[in-house]
Length: 296
Image (cartoon, rainbow, N blue to C red; front, side, top):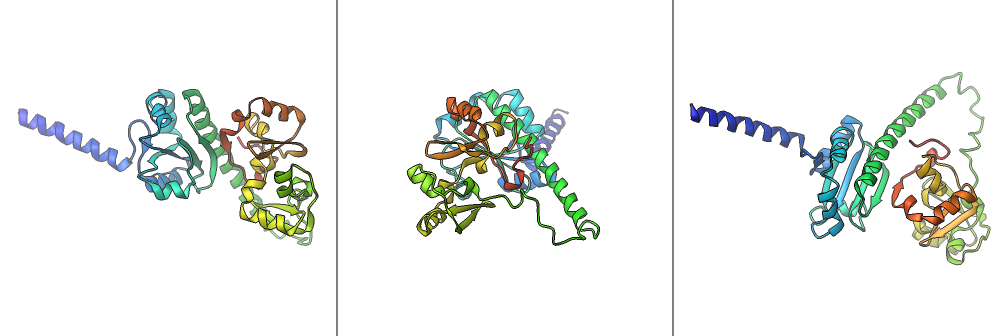
C-alpha cells in the first residue's frame, strides 16, 4: 500500500513536470525559449516581452529579487503578456539581433514582431507594472487600428469607392518634408537651421528629409538615426502623458544628450526639460501612420 501511494505521488509529480515543460513557463510567468514564446504570442495575440539580463548585472539581480516576484507583476505576466527571459551571454545571436547595448533591457513586440515599447535600466515595481500595462494597451490599440485599416482597404477596393482613381491621397499622406525642409545634418552638427534642397532628399522610416549639400545627404545615409528626431518627430510629452502621437514643430525643438526632440508647444518643451529621463527611459516605438492618432 505504501509503495502504491509513493508511486501515485511520483506519477502525479511527473505529470505536473511534463505539463510545465510543455507550457514552457514557470509559475512567475517567465519562459526561457524565445521561439516557443514568439509562437505563443502569435497564437494568443498577446504582446511578447523579451527581457535581457546577465548573471554579472547588478540591476538585473536586483529586479529578480525585488520586482519579478511581486504579485502584481506575476499576475500581469501570467494573464496578459507572453514573457521570455534571456541571458545575453547564453543568447548572443538574439542579443545582437535586438541590438542590446545595456542591461537590463526590456523589449515588447507585437505578435507580428514589430517593436512597440522599449526600456533599459532598473525599474521599480510601480514603474514596471506601468510599463507592462502600457505595452498591453498599446498592443490592443495597434491591433484595432490594423483591423480598421484592413477594413478601409477593402472598402476602397470596391468600384464605388474607387470610381475616381485620379484623386490624390490625403494631405497627410503627402506630408511636407520633415523638419520643415531644414537639413538634419547641418542642424545636428552646427545647431543651425539651414534649408535643404528639394533635389537632395532621402527617406528614413517612411519620412522624407531634405539636405543642404550632397555631402550632408551622404553623411545622413551612413547613420540616419543620429540625425533624425526621436519619436518620429512627435511630441515626447504628449506620447507619454496623453498617449497621442502628436507631430512636433521645429520652433519648439530641443536637444538632449545630442538627440533632437520636437514638441507641439513651448509648455511641453519646458516640461520635458525639467525631467527628460521621465519621457525617454521607456520608449514608445511609433510608426509613421500612427501620427496624430491615439496610441493607447
